[in-house]
Image (cartoon, rainbow, N blue to C red):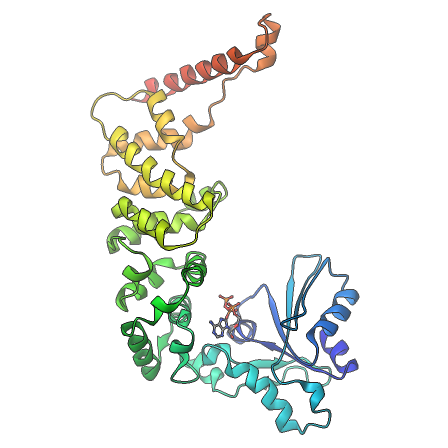
Length: 390
Ligand code: ATP
């Protein structure tokens, strides 16, 4: 549809960036990135109409637009830099150089390929920087020597792709990366942009591998101030279990689960993370409550005296699910772990079994007493559960 509309409008269109890389790797990608030699807004509008898009999001200033289809698929359209209409009789080389120019602004060769999808030219690969070969050989390579200086977030992107694809840094690229880190260029980037990259890292499958690269190249401490890197702990933490995926649904802000893991061995350090990055109030709250909740739970669950179910319940309800796994791995005694499991598997689901309706039926006047009674019953039940276990 895109290609057909483009040729009708006299434009050339290309798939670009990550989608091309992933297509060539045989991986799936959710979003489509399309570059248009022409007005992306016009094309996006026509394509959107034809495909009955549920959303059309134009950005007039940047000459870009996104459409979202009924199945949730997002398609981003952007206009390649050179104004196509100023050169109506452009020679093919010039046309190629327009997409070439767009590709030249990108980060690594493997992300700087395009596949033409204009009707009649579908499937032609544009690979001006040797991305295909690098993809085959598993190499991350920048397009020019100033790449990391121009945009130091590419340092983090490079390490993320290294971890994700199990690739290697090309020799000169590695030297440039090391120099850019040593030159402190990452400090020049706004913390909001670094935070954006960290969220992407925590959305990866193999987080540990990327953290190892951060450590290896000396950026771990920079992006996670005061975090204590202990590889054994991190290995266990990010070696996901079924439990984790189950938990993920309960977490309000899943990426903070990653932060909790990184800071588990120095919970005080979390304040530095909060200070450094522009977090939302809710994110701050989860991290603070997480750190505090873990500290309190560690103390309680590790006591050698008998611990009441109510005590466990009251301490652990304050801990957000983003901190469960960090806590669990920090518990080194069998008994403490068992106590946590009881909370995790049973206590937190316990309901009072009777409702306000039952109390009404007993003739009790509705009021604040209701909550108190229901809470009491719940606590009694909770105590019962633990007595049978401990
Ligand atoms: P992912 O699979 O993680 O989404 P992606 O390569 O699709 O990877 P995006 O962040 O969606 O990543 O970026 C799309 C494309 O935009 C990249 O493939 C790359 O060509 C370009 N790009 C993104 N960020 C940068 C950057 N900081 N500098 C240069 N080009 C970039």
